[in-house]
Image: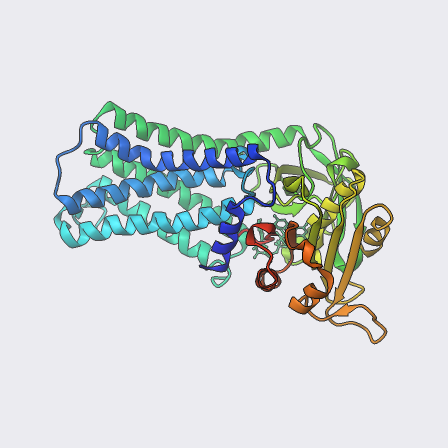
Amino acid sequence: MTQQAQVLAARHQPLHDRPPLVLAHGAAILVLGMLAICAPFAVLLSTGRPPSGGPIWDFSMGLGFGALALAALQFALTGRLRWITHPFGADIVYLSHRYLSWGMVGLMLGHFALLYVFHQPALGVLNPLEARWELTAGRVALACFLVLIITSQFRKRLHLRHELWRVLHLTLALLGMLAGIAHVLGVGNLTNTPEKQLLWLGATLGFMAVLVHTHVIRPWWMNRNTWRVVSNTPERGDVHTLELAPEGQALRRWKPGQFAWLKVERSPYSLVEHPFTISTAPEQGPNLAFSIKPLGDHTEELIKTPVGARAYIDGPYGAFSVDRAAKAPGFVMIAGGVGITPLLSNLHALVARHDPRPVILIYGTPTWEDASFREELKAMKQRLDLTLVHVIDTPSDDWQGESGKIDRELLLRHLPADTRHWPHLLCGPGPMLDALRRDLADLGVPLRHIDYEIFELV
Ligand SMILES: Cc1cc2nc3c(=O)[nH]c(=O)nc-3n(C[C@H](O)[C@H](O)[C@H](O)COP(=O)(O)OP(=O)(O)OC[C@H]3O[C@@H](n4cnc5c(N)ncnc54)[C@H](O)[C@@H]3O)c2cc1C
Protein backbone atom coordinates (compact mmCIF):
# COMPACT_ATOMS: atom_id res chain seq x y z
CA MET A 1 0.00 0.00 0.00
CA THR A 2 1.49 3.38 -0.96
CA GLN A 3 1.79 6.22 1.50
CA GLN A 4 -1.03 8.14 -0.15
CA ALA A 5 -3.26 5.06 -0.25
CA GLN A 6 -2.70 4.58 3.48
CA VAL A 7 -3.67 8.17 4.12
CA LEU A 8 -6.73 7.62 1.97
CA ALA A 9 -7.65 4.46 3.87
CA ALA A 10 -7.15 6.21 7.20
CA ARG A 11 -9.34 9.09 6.15
CA HIS A 12 -12.12 6.80 5.07
CA GLN A 13 -12.37 5.71 8.65
CA PRO A 14 -13.94 8.17 11.04
CA LEU A 15 -11.55 10.70 12.58
CA HIS A 16 -12.31 10.14 16.22
CA ASP A 17 -16.00 10.82 16.61
CA ARG A 18 -17.01 12.31 13.27
CA PRO A 19 -20.72 13.17 13.51
CA PRO A 20 -22.95 10.34 12.22
CA LEU A 21 -24.60 12.71 9.72
CA VAL A 22 -21.27 13.31 7.99
CA LEU A 23 -20.67 9.54 7.86
CA ALA A 24 -24.10 8.95 6.35
CA HIS A 25 -23.43 11.74 3.87
CA GLY A 26 -20.07 10.17 2.92
CA ALA A 27 -21.66 6.73 2.50
CA ALA A 28 -24.41 8.21 0.31
CA ILE A 29 -21.81 9.86 -1.98
CA LEU A 30 -19.91 6.55 -2.30
CA VAL A 31 -23.12 4.67 -3.17
CA LEU A 32 -24.06 7.36 -5.74
CA GLY A 33 -20.58 7.08 -7.29
CA MET A 34 -20.90 3.30 -7.57
CA LEU A 35 -24.36 3.69 -9.11
CA ALA A 36 -22.98 6.18 -11.64
CA ILE A 37 -20.32 3.67 -12.69
CA CYS A 38 -22.76 0.73 -12.82
CA ALA A 39 -25.62 2.59 -14.55
CA PRO A 40 -24.34 2.06 -18.13
CA PHE A 41 -24.02 -1.69 -17.50
CA ALA A 42 -27.49 -1.93 -15.97
CA VAL A 43 -29.03 -0.11 -18.93
CA LEU A 44 -26.97 -2.14 -21.40
CA LEU A 45 -28.06 -5.45 -19.88
CA SER A 46 -31.68 -4.60 -19.19
CA THR A 47 -32.67 -3.02 -22.50
CA GLY A 48 -32.24 -4.52 -25.95
CA ARG A 49 -28.81 -6.11 -25.65
CA PRO A 50 -26.89 -5.72 -28.94
CA PRO A 51 -25.98 -8.96 -30.76
CA SER A 52 -22.95 -10.50 -29.08
CA GLY A 53 -19.63 -10.48 -30.94
CA GLY A 54 -18.32 -13.19 -28.61
CA PRO A 55 -17.17 -13.00 -24.99
CA ILE A 56 -13.98 -11.03 -25.70
CA TRP A 57 -15.85 -8.52 -27.83
CA ASP A 58 -18.51 -8.10 -25.13
CA PHE A 59 -15.90 -7.80 -22.41
CA SER A 60 -14.04 -5.16 -24.42
CA MET A 61 -17.28 -3.16 -24.90
CA GLY A 62 -17.89 -3.41 -21.14
CA LEU A 63 -14.42 -1.99 -20.46
CA GLY A 64 -15.07 0.93 -22.83
CA PHE A 65 -18.42 1.66 -21.19
CA GLY A 66 -16.90 1.53 -17.71
CA ALA A 67 -14.07 3.84 -18.80
CA LEU A 68 -16.45 6.49 -20.05
CA ALA A 69 -18.64 6.26 -16.95
CA LEU A 70 -15.50 6.76 -14.81
CA ALA A 71 -14.45 9.71 -17.01
CA ALA A 72 -17.83 11.40 -16.47
CA LEU A 73 -17.49 10.82 -12.71
CA GLN A 74 -14.14 12.68 -12.68
CA PHE A 75 -15.92 15.92 -13.59
CA ALA A 76 -18.13 15.58 -10.53
CA LEU A 77 -15.11 14.82 -8.32
CA THR A 78 -13.11 17.86 -9.44
CA GLY A 79 -16.04 20.27 -9.86
CA ARG A 80 -15.61 21.61 -6.30
CA LEU A 81 -19.12 20.51 -5.44
CA ARG A 82 -19.22 21.03 -1.70
CA TRP A 83 -21.77 18.29 -1.10
CA ILE A 84 -19.20 15.85 -2.53
CA THR A 85 -16.03 17.18 -0.86
CA HIS A 86 -17.57 17.91 2.56
CA PRO A 87 -17.53 14.42 4.14
CA PHE A 88 -14.04 13.50 2.91
CA GLY A 89 -11.99 16.68 2.55
CA ALA A 90 -10.79 18.14 -0.75
CA ASP A 91 -7.39 16.39 -0.71
CA ILE A 92 -9.01 12.96 -0.40
CA VAL A 93 -11.35 13.76 -3.27
CA TYR A 94 -8.37 14.85 -5.41
CA LEU A 95 -6.45 11.70 -4.46
CA SER A 96 -9.45 9.56 -5.44
CA HIS A 97 -9.60 11.49 -8.70
CA ARG A 98 -5.97 10.59 -9.33
CA TYR A 99 -6.43 6.85 -8.65
CA LEU A 100 -9.75 6.62 -10.52
CA SER A 101 -8.18 8.37 -13.53
CA TRP A 102 -5.53 5.69 -13.70
CA GLY A 103 -8.33 3.10 -13.53
CA MET A 104 -10.21 4.90 -16.30
CA VAL A 105 -7.19 4.97 -18.63
CA GLY A 106 -6.49 1.31 -17.78
CA LEU A 107 -10.02 0.35 -18.83
CA MET A 108 -9.69 2.39 -22.05
CA LEU A 109 -6.39 0.73 -22.90
CA GLY A 110 -7.92 -2.68 -22.13
CA HIS A 111 -10.87 -1.92 -24.43
CA PHE A 112 -8.53 -0.92 -27.26
CA ALA A 113 -5.97 -3.70 -26.68
CA LEU A 114 -8.58 -6.50 -26.74
CA LEU A 115 -10.01 -5.22 -30.02
CA TYR A 116 -6.50 -4.75 -31.44
CA VAL A 117 -5.48 -8.33 -30.60
CA PHE A 118 -8.72 -10.25 -31.23
CA HIS A 119 -10.86 -8.10 -33.53
CA GLN A 120 -8.40 -5.98 -35.47
CA PRO A 121 -10.58 -5.52 -38.59
CA ALA A 122 -13.17 -3.73 -36.41
CA LEU A 123 -10.64 -0.97 -35.72
CA GLY A 124 -10.35 -0.06 -39.42
CA VAL A 125 -7.52 2.09 -40.71
CA LEU A 126 -5.56 4.59 -38.61
CA ASN A 127 -5.49 7.43 -41.15
CA PRO A 128 -8.25 9.81 -39.98
CA LEU A 129 -8.96 10.86 -43.59
CA GLU A 130 -9.97 7.32 -44.50
CA ALA A 131 -11.10 5.94 -41.13
CA ARG A 132 -14.72 5.94 -39.91
CA TRP A 133 -15.16 9.18 -37.93
CA GLU A 134 -16.49 7.45 -34.83
CA LEU A 135 -13.41 5.22 -34.63
CA THR A 136 -11.14 8.25 -35.00
CA ALA A 137 -13.14 9.88 -32.20
CA GLY A 138 -12.37 6.86 -30.01
CA ARG A 139 -8.64 7.16 -30.75
CA VAL A 140 -8.73 10.91 -30.03
CA ALA A 141 -10.40 10.21 -26.67
CA LEU A 142 -7.77 7.61 -25.77
CA ALA A 143 -4.91 9.93 -26.82
CA CYS A 144 -6.36 12.87 -24.84
CA PHE A 145 -6.76 10.86 -21.63
CA LEU A 146 -3.31 9.28 -22.02
CA VAL A 147 -1.60 12.67 -22.42
CA LEU A 148 -3.72 14.05 -19.59
CA ILE A 149 -2.68 11.37 -17.14
CA ILE A 150 1.01 11.43 -18.11
CA THR A 151 1.23 15.23 -17.82
CA SER A 152 -0.50 15.08 -14.43
CA GLN A 153 1.61 12.28 -12.99
CA PHE A 154 4.91 13.71 -14.22
CA ARG A 155 4.08 17.44 -14.18
CA LYS A 156 7.10 18.40 -12.10
CA ARG A 157 9.55 16.19 -14.04
CA LEU A 158 8.21 17.65 -17.30
CA HIS A 159 8.77 21.16 -15.84
CA LEU A 160 5.17 22.09 -16.61
CA ARG A 161 4.08 25.21 -14.75
CA HIS A 162 0.95 24.64 -12.68
CA GLU A 163 -1.03 27.30 -14.57
CA LEU A 164 -0.16 25.87 -18.01
CA TRP A 165 -0.84 22.34 -16.77
CA ARG A 166 -4.27 23.40 -15.53
CA VAL A 167 -5.33 24.84 -18.90
CA LEU A 168 -3.99 21.74 -20.65
CA HIS A 169 -5.75 19.44 -18.17
CA LEU A 170 -9.11 21.11 -18.63
CA THR A 171 -8.81 21.23 -22.44
CA LEU A 172 -7.78 17.58 -22.73
CA ALA A 173 -10.50 16.43 -20.32
CA LEU A 174 -13.19 18.29 -22.24
CA LEU A 175 -11.95 17.14 -25.64
CA GLY A 176 -11.46 13.55 -24.42
CA MET A 177 -14.94 13.37 -22.92
CA LEU A 178 -16.65 14.85 -26.00
CA ALA A 179 -14.67 12.52 -28.31
CA GLY A 180 -15.53 9.53 -26.08
CA ILE A 181 -19.25 10.28 -26.16
CA ALA A 182 -19.10 10.89 -29.94
CA HIS A 183 -17.39 7.51 -30.28
CA VAL A 184 -20.12 5.69 -28.33
CA LEU A 185 -22.92 7.48 -30.18
CA GLY A 186 -21.24 6.97 -33.58
CA VAL A 187 -20.57 3.27 -33.07
CA GLY A 188 -24.27 3.08 -32.40
CA ASN A 189 -24.78 -0.50 -31.31
CA LEU A 190 -24.69 0.59 -27.68
CA THR A 191 -27.16 3.38 -28.18
CA ASN A 192 -29.83 1.48 -30.04
CA THR A 193 -32.64 2.04 -27.53
CA PRO A 194 -34.16 5.27 -26.13
CA GLU A 195 -32.97 4.27 -22.62
CA LYS A 196 -29.35 4.10 -23.74
CA GLN A 197 -29.63 7.36 -25.66
CA LEU A 198 -31.12 8.98 -22.55
CA LEU A 199 -28.26 7.64 -20.45
CA TRP A 200 -25.58 9.19 -22.67
CA LEU A 201 -27.54 12.40 -23.04
CA GLY A 202 -27.74 12.55 -19.22
CA ALA A 203 -24.00 11.89 -18.86
CA THR A 204 -23.17 14.62 -21.41
CA LEU A 205 -25.50 17.15 -19.81
CA GLY A 206 -24.23 16.21 -16.35
CA PHE A 207 -20.57 16.82 -17.08
CA MET A 208 -21.35 20.00 -19.04
CA ALA A 209 -23.42 21.25 -16.07
CA VAL A 210 -20.50 20.69 -13.68
CA LEU A 211 -18.19 22.61 -16.04
CA VAL A 212 -20.65 25.50 -16.34
CA HIS A 213 -21.10 25.52 -12.55
CA THR A 214 -17.33 25.63 -11.87
CA HIS A 215 -16.20 27.98 -14.62
CA VAL A 216 -19.21 30.23 -15.25
CA ILE A 217 -21.75 30.30 -12.42
CA ARG A 218 -19.32 30.23 -9.49
CA PRO A 219 -17.04 33.01 -10.93
CA TRP A 220 -20.17 35.04 -11.72
CA TRP A 221 -21.22 34.72 -8.07
CA MET A 222 -17.68 35.62 -6.94
CA ASN A 223 -17.82 38.73 -9.13
CA ARG A 224 -20.89 39.87 -7.20
CA ASN A 225 -19.27 39.17 -3.83
CA THR A 226 -15.81 40.66 -4.07
CA TRP A 227 -13.27 41.05 -1.25
CA ARG A 228 -10.83 43.89 -0.55
CA VAL A 229 -7.32 43.49 0.88
CA VAL A 230 -7.31 45.68 4.00
CA SER A 231 -3.85 44.82 5.31
CA ASN A 232 -0.69 43.01 4.33
CA THR A 233 1.40 42.19 7.40
CA PRO A 234 4.87 40.64 7.27
CA GLU A 235 5.27 37.84 9.83
CA ARG A 236 8.27 35.89 11.02
CA GLY A 237 9.53 33.16 8.68
CA ASP A 238 9.04 35.14 5.47
CA VAL A 239 5.25 34.74 5.74
CA HIS A 240 2.84 37.56 4.86
CA THR A 241 -0.71 37.75 6.19
CA LEU A 242 -3.28 39.25 3.85
CA GLU A 243 -6.46 40.35 5.62
CA LEU A 244 -9.51 40.54 3.38
CA ALA A 245 -12.81 42.29 4.09
CA PRO A 246 -16.03 41.29 2.31
CA GLU A 247 -17.60 43.82 -0.04
CA GLY A 248 -20.59 41.60 -0.66
CA GLN A 249 -21.71 38.49 1.17
CA ALA A 250 -19.23 37.23 3.78
CA LEU A 251 -18.14 33.60 3.83
CA ARG A 252 -20.88 31.46 5.35
CA ARG A 253 -20.83 28.21 7.29
CA TRP A 254 -17.10 27.65 7.39
CA LYS A 255 -15.04 25.76 9.90
CA PRO A 256 -11.62 26.45 11.38
CA GLY A 257 -8.82 24.84 9.34
CA GLN A 258 -10.64 25.10 6.02
CA PHE A 259 -9.11 26.64 2.89
CA ALA A 260 -10.27 28.70 -0.09
CA TRP A 261 -9.09 29.31 -3.64
CA LEU A 262 -7.78 32.84 -3.87
CA LYS A 263 -7.55 35.16 -6.88
CA VAL A 264 -6.10 38.60 -6.39
CA GLU A 265 -6.31 41.35 -9.02
CA ARG A 266 -7.38 38.94 -11.76
CA SER A 267 -10.63 38.19 -13.49
CA PRO A 268 -12.88 35.89 -11.43
CA TYR A 269 -13.00 33.72 -14.57
CA SER A 270 -9.19 33.33 -14.63
CA LEU A 271 -7.84 29.80 -14.23
CA VAL A 272 -4.96 31.22 -12.17
CA GLU A 273 -6.02 30.62 -8.58
CA HIS A 274 -4.26 29.02 -5.64
CA PRO A 275 -5.50 27.30 -2.49
CA PHE A 276 -4.69 28.87 0.90
CA THR A 277 -5.84 28.09 4.40
CA ILE A 278 -7.93 30.70 6.17
CA SER A 279 -5.63 31.30 9.13
CA THR A 280 -8.27 32.98 11.30
CA ALA A 281 -11.37 31.35 12.82
CA PRO A 282 -15.04 31.92 11.96
CA GLU A 283 -15.61 33.34 15.46
CA GLN A 284 -13.21 36.24 14.70
CA GLY A 285 -15.63 38.02 12.38
CA PRO A 286 -16.31 38.36 8.67
CA ASN A 287 -12.77 39.38 7.68
CA LEU A 288 -10.53 36.52 6.56
CA ALA A 289 -6.74 36.18 6.84
CA PHE A 290 -4.47 34.18 4.56
CA SER A 291 -0.89 33.68 5.73
CA ILE A 292 1.26 33.05 2.69
CA LYS A 293 4.83 31.84 2.32
CA PRO A 294 6.53 32.63 -1.00
CA LEU A 295 7.45 29.27 -2.49
CA GLY A 296 7.16 30.04 -6.22
CA ASP A 297 6.33 32.74 -8.75
CA HIS A 298 2.66 33.16 -7.79
CA THR A 299 3.20 33.33 -4.04
CA GLU A 300 6.16 35.72 -4.58
CA GLU A 301 3.69 38.00 -6.35
CA LEU A 302 0.90 37.52 -3.80
CA ILE A 303 2.92 38.61 -0.79
CA LYS A 304 3.48 41.99 -2.53
CA THR A 305 -0.29 42.59 -2.83
CA PRO A 306 -1.05 46.25 -2.08
CA VAL A 307 -3.74 47.26 0.41
CA GLY A 308 -6.92 48.02 -1.54
CA ALA A 309 -6.45 45.22 -4.08
CA ARG A 310 -9.59 43.38 -5.15
CA ALA A 311 -9.78 39.65 -4.45
CA TYR A 312 -12.09 36.74 -5.21
CA ILE A 313 -12.59 33.80 -2.89
CA ASP A 314 -13.94 30.39 -3.77
CA GLY A 315 -14.55 28.42 -0.62
CA PRO A 316 -14.68 27.12 2.00
CA TYR A 317 -13.25 23.67 1.26
CA GLY A 318 -11.47 21.01 3.26
CA ALA A 319 -12.13 19.18 6.49
CA PHE A 320 -8.97 19.63 8.57
CA SER A 321 -10.85 20.84 11.57
CA VAL A 322 -11.25 20.27 15.30
CA ASP A 323 -14.98 20.46 14.57
CA ARG A 324 -14.81 16.94 13.15
CA ALA A 325 -13.91 15.62 16.57
CA ALA A 326 -16.36 17.48 18.75
CA LYS A 327 -16.15 15.01 21.64
CA ALA A 328 -12.38 14.41 21.63
CA PRO A 329 -10.77 14.71 25.10
CA GLY A 330 -7.89 16.79 23.66
CA PHE A 331 -5.83 17.39 20.53
CA VAL A 332 -2.29 16.75 19.37
CA MET A 333 -1.19 19.18 16.66
CA ILE A 334 2.10 18.96 14.78
CA ALA A 335 3.19 21.63 12.29
CA GLY A 336 6.20 22.15 10.08
CA GLY A 337 6.93 25.65 8.72
CA VAL A 338 3.97 27.32 7.00
CA GLY A 339 1.93 24.21 7.86
CA ILE A 340 1.13 26.11 11.07
CA THR A 341 -1.67 28.05 9.26
CA PRO A 342 -4.55 25.54 9.55
CA LEU A 343 -3.53 24.73 13.12
CA LEU A 344 -3.48 28.43 13.96
CA SER A 345 -7.03 28.74 12.68
CA ASN A 346 -8.13 25.74 14.78
CA LEU A 347 -6.40 27.18 17.86
CA HIS A 348 -8.07 30.57 17.32
CA ALA A 349 -11.43 28.78 17.28
CA LEU A 350 -10.69 26.87 20.51
CA VAL A 351 -9.62 30.12 22.20
CA ALA A 352 -12.70 32.00 21.00
CA ARG A 353 -14.93 29.19 22.31
CA HIS A 354 -13.18 29.08 25.71
CA ASP A 355 -12.62 25.39 25.03
CA PRO A 356 -11.18 23.78 28.20
CA ARG A 357 -9.66 20.73 26.46
CA PRO A 358 -5.87 20.30 26.45
CA VAL A 359 -3.91 20.83 23.24
CA ILE A 360 -0.29 19.84 22.62
CA LEU A 361 1.28 21.72 19.71
CA ILE A 362 4.67 20.60 18.40
CA TYR A 363 5.94 23.17 15.92
CA GLY A 364 9.09 22.61 13.87
CA THR A 365 10.90 25.41 12.04
CA PRO A 366 14.40 25.75 10.54
CA THR A 367 15.40 28.53 13.00
CA TRP A 368 13.83 30.34 15.95
CA GLU A 369 13.39 33.42 13.75
CA ASP A 370 11.36 31.30 11.29
CA ALA A 371 8.76 30.43 13.92
CA SER A 372 5.82 32.42 12.47
CA PHE A 373 3.17 33.58 14.95
CA ARG A 374 5.29 32.50 17.95
CA GLU A 375 4.17 35.52 20.02
CA GLU A 376 0.52 34.88 19.15
CA LEU A 377 0.88 31.22 20.12
CA LYS A 378 2.56 32.11 23.40
CA ALA A 379 -0.27 34.53 24.20
CA MET A 380 -2.82 31.77 23.56
CA LYS A 381 -1.38 29.84 26.50
CA GLN A 382 -3.11 32.37 28.80
CA ARG A 383 -6.51 31.45 27.39
CA LEU A 384 -6.14 27.80 26.41
CA ASP A 385 -4.73 24.66 28.03
CA LEU A 386 -1.95 24.73 25.43
CA THR A 387 1.39 22.97 25.71
CA LEU A 388 3.68 24.53 23.13
CA VAL A 389 6.84 22.73 22.02
CA HIS A 390 9.05 24.57 19.53
CA VAL A 391 11.52 22.34 17.70
CA ILE A 392 14.35 24.20 15.96
CA ASP A 393 16.18 22.42 13.19
CA THR A 394 19.39 24.46 13.36
CA PRO A 395 19.32 26.25 16.72
CA SER A 396 21.66 28.97 17.95
CA ASP A 397 24.17 28.09 20.70
CA ASP A 398 22.00 29.57 23.44
CA TRP A 399 18.80 27.65 22.44
CA GLN A 400 17.55 25.61 25.38
CA GLY A 401 14.57 23.87 23.85
CA GLU A 402 14.11 20.92 21.50
CA SER A 403 16.21 20.80 18.36
CA GLY A 404 16.69 18.68 15.23
CA LYS A 405 13.85 16.80 13.52
CA ILE A 406 10.56 15.83 15.13
CA ASP A 407 11.20 12.12 15.62
CA ARG A 408 9.91 9.17 17.63
CA GLU A 409 11.96 10.00 20.74
CA LEU A 410 10.83 13.62 20.72
CA LEU A 411 7.20 12.50 20.38
CA LEU A 412 7.66 10.06 23.27
CA ARG A 413 9.05 12.88 25.44
CA HIS A 414 6.08 15.18 24.83
CA LEU A 415 3.07 12.99 24.16
CA PRO A 416 1.84 11.15 27.28
CA ALA A 417 0.37 7.68 26.75
CA ASP A 418 -3.21 8.91 27.27
CA THR A 419 -2.95 11.11 24.15
CA ARG A 420 -2.74 8.10 21.79
CA HIS A 421 -6.50 8.23 21.22
CA TRP A 422 -6.71 11.97 20.76
CA PRO A 423 -7.05 13.27 17.20
CA HIS A 424 -3.61 14.10 15.74
CA LEU A 425 -3.71 16.98 13.24
CA LEU A 426 -0.56 17.21 11.12
CA CYS A 427 0.46 19.76 8.51
CA GLY A 428 3.92 20.30 7.05
CA PRO A 429 6.24 19.24 4.22
CA GLY A 430 5.52 15.84 2.61
CA PRO A 431 8.63 14.00 3.92
CA MET A 432 7.95 15.26 7.46
CA LEU A 433 4.35 13.99 7.30
CA ASP A 434 5.52 10.59 6.02
CA ALA A 435 8.02 10.22 8.87
CA LEU A 436 5.51 11.43 11.48
CA ARG A 437 2.86 8.97 10.33
CA ARG A 438 5.33 6.11 10.74
CA ASP A 439 6.53 7.33 14.14
CA LEU A 440 3.03 7.89 15.49
CA ALA A 441 1.87 4.48 14.27
CA ASP A 442 4.95 3.04 15.96
CA LEU A 443 3.90 4.68 19.22
CA GLY A 444 0.48 3.04 18.92
CA VAL A 445 -1.61 5.90 17.52
CA PRO A 446 -4.31 4.32 15.32
CA LEU A 447 -4.24 5.58 11.71
CA ARG A 448 -7.82 6.80 12.03
CA HIS A 449 -6.71 9.28 14.70
CA ILE A 450 -4.16 10.82 12.34
CA ASP A 451 -5.41 13.54 10.04
CA TYR A 452 -3.25 15.29 7.44
CA GLU A 453 -3.48 18.49 5.49
CA ILE A 454 -1.49 18.13 2.29
CA PHE A 455 -0.46 21.47 0.75
CA GLU A 456 0.15 19.90 -2.67
CA LEU A 457 -3.00 18.83 -4.48
CA VAL A 458 -1.18 18.10 -7.77
C1 LIG B 1 -5.33 22.89 0.93
C2 LIG B 1 -4.12 23.78 0.79
C3 LIG B 1 -3.89 24.80 1.71
C4 LIG B 1 -2.76 25.61 1.58
N1 LIG B 1 -2.55 26.60 2.50
C5 LIG B 1 -1.46 27.38 2.40
C6 LIG B 1 -1.22 28.42 3.35
O1 LIG B 1 -2.00 28.65 4.27
N2 LIG B 1 -0.10 29.18 3.20
C7 LIG B 1 0.79 28.96 2.18
O2 LIG B 1 1.78 29.69 2.09
N3 LIG B 1 0.58 27.97 1.27
C8 LIG B 1 -0.52 27.18 1.35
N4 LIG B 1 -0.73 26.20 0.41
C9 LIG B 1 0.27 25.99 -0.64
C10 LIG B 1 0.08 26.99 -1.76
O3 LIG B 1 -1.16 26.76 -2.42
C11 LIG B 1 1.23 26.82 -2.77
O4 LIG B 1 2.43 27.12 -2.10
C12 LIG B 1 1.09 27.76 -3.91
O5 LIG B 1 -0.03 27.41 -4.69
C13 LIG B 1 2.36 27.67 -4.74
O6 LIG B 1 2.21 28.40 -5.94
P1 LIG B 1 3.47 29.11 -6.64
O7 LIG B 1 3.12 29.39 -8.06
O8 LIG B 1 3.94 30.25 -5.84
O9 LIG B 1 4.61 28.04 -6.57
P2 LIG B 1 4.95 26.88 -7.56
O10 LIG B 1 6.42 26.61 -7.48
O11 LIG B 1 4.36 27.12 -8.89
O12 LIG B 1 4.15 25.70 -6.92
C14 LIG B 1 4.65 24.95 -5.84
C15 LIG B 1 3.68 23.78 -5.67
O13 LIG B 1 2.42 24.26 -5.20
C16 LIG B 1 1.35 23.56 -5.87
N5 LIG B 1 0.54 24.53 -6.65
C17 LIG B 1 0.98 25.52 -7.44
N6 LIG B 1 -0.03 26.17 -7.99
C18 LIG B 1 -1.16 25.58 -7.55
C19 LIG B 1 -2.54 25.79 -7.77
N7 LIG B 1 -3.00 26.73 -8.55
N8 LIG B 1 -3.42 24.96 -7.15
C20 LIG B 1 -2.97 23.97 -6.36
N9 LIG B 1 -1.69 23.72 -6.09
C21 LIG B 1 -0.79 24.51 -6.68
C22 LIG B 1 1.97 22.56 -6.79
O14 LIG B 1 2.02 21.32 -6.16
C23 LIG B 1 3.35 23.08 -6.99
O15 LIG B 1 4.28 22.08 -7.27
C24 LIG B 1 -1.85 25.39 0.52
C25 LIG B 1 -2.10 24.39 -0.41
C26 LIG B 1 -3.21 23.59 -0.28
C27 LIG B 1 -3.47 22.51 -1.30
